[in-house]
Amino acid sequence: MSKITASMVKELREKTGVGMMDCKQALTENDGDMEKAVDWLRAKGLSKAAKKSSRAAAEGLVGVATDGKRGVLVEVNSETDFVARNDQFQDMVSKITSVAMETRGDVEALKAAPFPGAGKSVEEHVKEMVGSIGENMTVRRAAYQEVPEGAVVAYMHNQAAPGLGKIGVLVALESAGDTAKLEELGKKLAMHVAAAAPLALSEEDIDADVAERERAVYVEQARESGKPENIIEKMVEGRMKKFFKESVLLSQIFVMDNETPIAKVIKEAEAEVGAPIKLTGFTRMQLGEGVEKKQEDFAAEVAKTAGV
Image 1 (cartoon, one colour):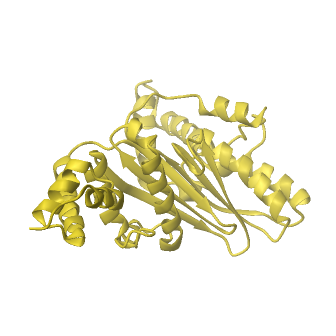
Image 2 (spheres, one colour):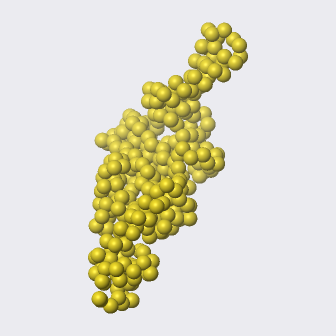
Image 3 (cartoon, one colour):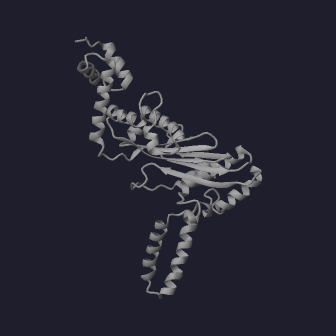
């Protein structure tokens, strides 16, 4: 049997990030064979990941990356905010986000893609990190925006590290105009999206099921008034118009001046940009969306950040 030296344990630890005692055991179990020891630890990491898979992973980070005409958002979850502040976790999320640019927001393709410099897939690397850090982690979702000409602009609300935070936004602006001016407009619009959380770009883009559920609630509320059906219908239509106006990005009131509809903000910017501008899409990704959390006044925060 090969003698397990301190330098061998140190080398394995540097390769895997696993604790010293586990590294020593891995080398002992595999007669000092470094590659077999790595595989043994990988298997152990996978085992730990399986045991922890039932634990909620609602913390973590949203990562964002852009390269002019393309942009991507990725959410990687962890169990605690403490791990999300870990440099190793932040580095992993940044690298996963860079990979996601090439997989164009396809989560399954992202998980299967090679993790930079690791010789394994993104999914395998995340599972190894679970074994190393001892906390459940998962690549939850990704989103991608692209324009043929113009700019895809990103904004990260309350950035924890470059390109990392809890609310990330992408805004896609198609235009042949001044790119710098376009990016300036895009930044303001992205900050608005972070604050106002629109459901869709236009009324036609709102999910029919969402609109129908909203209508059903308004119908029940109106019927409680005891008014005739024809009056109830008018009441419901009025409330639905208000719902669409407040939920659709192009009709929302710009949070930075509280008076101008977003569609008008874009139209007025065309003179400065020097060409027509089309807002082709946006994505707002908030960490742990769907989990009940304390609500904060993001509109006030964004206005403060913008100095208005």
